[in-house]
Image 1: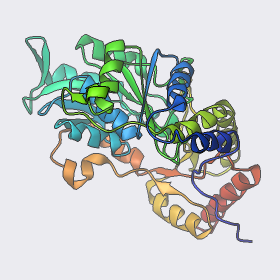
Image 2 (image 1 turned 60 degrees about the horizontal axis):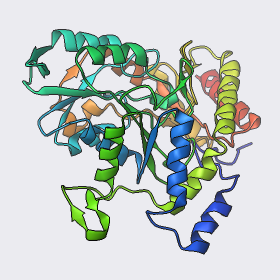
Image 3 (image 1 turned 180 degrees about the vertical axis):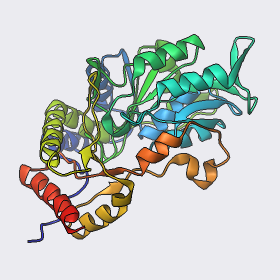
Length: 384
């Protein structure tokens, strides 16, 4: 019997969302100033374990501001993965800089520290205390790892490599709120962290983003840029080109209510991932993306690993069974606007991309939903 559609990842609105948003409507504090913005910034920074949080209109804005504050300028290059959603790469371009695409770790799917180290050691040169790409002649200014599907990148060795060359690390934690690396929350593991609260994330404001950092000067710079670089608000004195990247109080109210439930959301998603893994074990050539011993993933999106030959046919079949699935994002270096960018050791990444299918992962997912999804996967393979 055909089931109702099982979505990939949708918001779970079950706490104080209505109450807090209604308060904003009742008081008229609906725009980019209000107590909920302050609360959301404070509570996210406390949750992550850093000193400062700066709310933004979305995760892409958080990335853009962080890159600017870390000194990325036109003509520079930033080390980044190709296996990622496009937002961090576009943010690099917003700065007038270019990505250098480094291959991913085939097990975690995040930026491969060994490949980064090899590139910096063998393809770059130090001149007057700054690092330059031998091939392009451009300055390497920062490293931007992304915690793919909620699983942390191996950050300690990456930070060590970055430290050797005095490169800031901008941690894209958009998918990984609640995930941990050696019991430390993502978003606290580097120079600066960036989060997204889009509707498909583990908590949502309907949009929204956040920058997290322990660096006071960076926090002040990011906040200044996010408010149109308005040095003296009452007098409208702007001292440089800034951005209207502020989060509204009404969105922040939604975020505060969602954050109150985050720990339970993470627990549910981890239990669902364990259930998937347990019953998928009976199907040959299918597995759930791996979790490192040092990691605690929030399993933002549970992702199947299948053979490349099965990836598209299996997705097409599951869609006919009212199961919403999707492939991984197209590797960014293959997109027309980024095909001129340098690529380094991408063979393993291409191979892993061709195996990935993201499957239903919402907090609302039931045990029956999971059994149905896995049963349909089994039917597909039985019919081959």
